[in-house]
Image 1 (cartoon, rainbow, N blue to C red):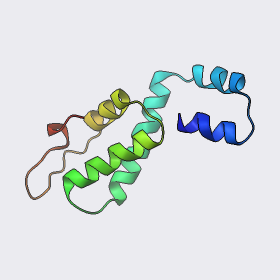
Image 2: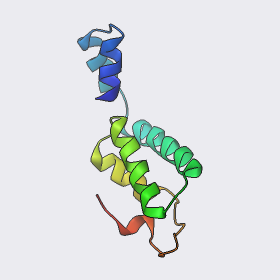
Image 3: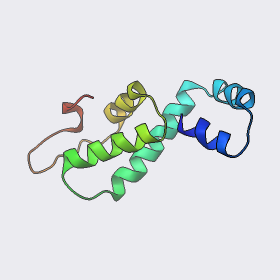
Image 4: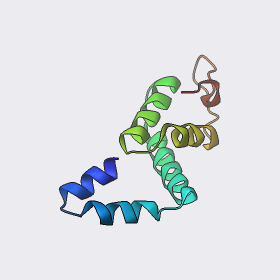
Length: 93
């Protein structure tokens, strides 16, 4: 949705947007979401759960579906724990 909105704002026709977005492979979308999440995770400060929520919110704002975001959070090698020993895979949204 975010990408669609941005393209519409730039004057791209809806039919071109629909065609272009329809041609995106699921695995390509997943890879891009993983790269973005991993990059942002490394730069985040704060409690573990706050960083996880921020990562999730970022991906959702960027237009990724909730199921893809959940998959990214599970797949990321973010097994670091915070002071409370919370694991990134302990929370599902």
